[in-house]
Image 1 (cartoon, rainbow, N blue to C red):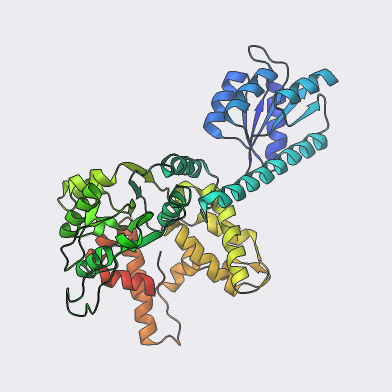
Image 2 (cartoon, rainbow, N blue to C red):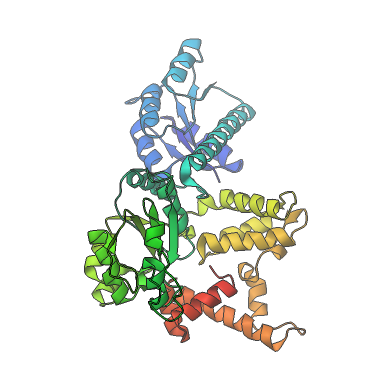
Length: 448
């Protein structure tokens, strides 16, 4: 729902306009002067401002100039009872998008509002496309929290500072890491990613630092590690909080000295690598509990970017859904189906514990199953609460034992992850699984 801020010193006009625009499907906030309007604009982030031209304390022109200094994309419609060319020109020069003369017909105002909001949507789409072309990649969203993330990406990208990305699983931390790399002076050099939870300690050590021939059973020849592969570029360490204590020591040495030895070797190798690490764990708490080295934590936590969960950026749902519908429709070679109102309502109601990754999986499934439009029946069962409760006690008659066991196992993993706040290591412990076994099952069941 698009939000409109109305500014007028006449209370009667505010009441009438609020009722008219609310009945037309808009969310409306009102202010009786310029100072109150500026405070509300900062707090509410309206999609459109409608302001009177003549007001005490602060004129419409002064308000427009103040708004333009901080909210450049918000369209502003000026109302004036005087309707002269001079007033209109003054308002437009100050940054107004349009003007309307009092008294006006309701239809005239609604058409002016829709025209201004349509222009804002086009400007937003163009900016998002420009940002994507400039290096934000597949990061989608224009919410306040995501704009804060973009600002941090821009500030840190030009430096060589180590970055720590924190946040729940499925929020898109690797996309943020790629965006930092793409917008940095290292963009033409390699971006190398490694998941620290998916490998055993021995395999992860070899993966990171490489090994010499004969270093261990099966080491038939020399192999470069990810640090060497990323020389000059960026190394992304996902799930860094799951790294063993001995590997934490070796990683700390690389960060301090920018040198290492391959497994089974003794020749120092120098590297120029920018580290971006990610975790869904609270590393500060892990330090207190003795599970993570304090000195390594401070080395990684030079610049921290908290990637917001989908629950904190629900206004991005429409553009995310549209993006994934278009993406997966193209993959299966069909035109993009529409999302009907009931399906969209279910999408808005769902908590999305698996964040953007869960949403993407749900839309991929829906696109495959949908006809001309995506309906509630095309969405995963967990998004349909009334059917989920019935399905939790009933299994299809034709379901095999293996399928039933896998269905139960998947539900238990999803529940354990939710209860563990998305921390895979804690969920694995609760389920009695090893971290690598849980990682395998997460991939098997496509759980975000």
